[in-house]
Structure formats: C-alpha cells, structure tokens
Amino acid sequence: MAGLKPAQQKELMKKLTLLALLLAFTLTACFPRRKPAPLGAEAPADNVPDITGSFALNATDNMGERYGGTLTVFAGDALGEYKLQWLVSGDIQEGEGTLEGNQLTFTWRSVSGTDQYLSGHGVYTVTVNGELYGERFIDGVEGPGIESAYPNSK
Image (cartoon, rainbow, N blue to C red; front, side, top):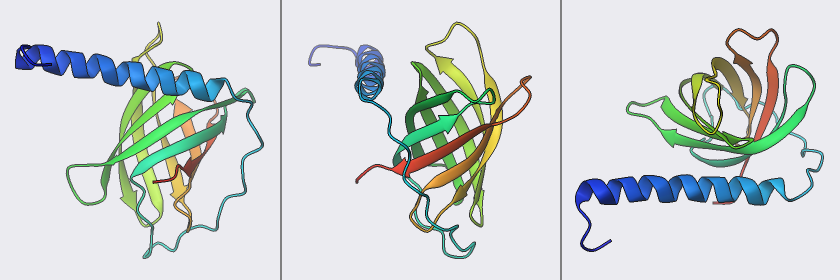
C-alpha cells in the first residue's frame, strides 16, 4: 500500500474486508448444515461470559426457512454496549446492542449485499458457554426469526 494516499488506503482496506467477509460466507455456504449443537444453560445475570468475537449462526426465519451465517460481536464505546455484524445470505447487517444481565437487546439494519433495505430489533440470551440465542425481528414483518450463535474458536 506504499504510495497510496491515506484515503485510498482506507478505501482499499474496506474493499478487502468486504471481500474477506464474502469469501467466508461463500465457504460456509459450500458445506452442508448440520443440526446445531445443544445450547448451554442460561448464564447467571451476574456472571455472563465475554461475548465479543466471531460466532457461527444457525437460524430459522419467521416462515420456517433455515439459514446460516456469521455473527461478529465487538465491544462498544461504553461498558455493556456492543456493535454487531451479521453476514447472512450475502447480506451484511450491522447493529448496536446493550447487555443487561444475560440479555443482549439490539437493533440492526442492512448495509450491503441486498437490493432492499431491512432493519429490525431482537434479543439474545447469553449462555454459560458464551452462546447467544433468541429472536430477531424484521421491521414490518410479522413474527420473529429464531437464532442461535455458537462461538468460533479464538
């Protein structure tokens, strides 16, 4: 990247990150989905494991269709705040959430990869194993999707 201006370097890094995410999605989509592993017990509200990192996502939408993807959880600007990024069916979605006890409440929106803008909200429960599970809603669509997210090895 020598010889590139800082703005050009930043734009190149954004494109490379998007390419890496799309490649990761493509590779995960090439392998058959297995039945998800059982989830651990709910974490005690006063002893929740760290939820930052990458997760394999298994889900069912409000119509009963199964899908998978990747969820990445980043620390937010303040204690108990998080930034989330989903890669689902070629669509990149981003959100913000707040952890209270073992409940991660969040909002999300589509940012890339689809011809329609989607947004919504949801709540995940954190397990003793650091898994996340719960409901995710699409604004304007009846019924939730059910999602389970399993931590990838760190």
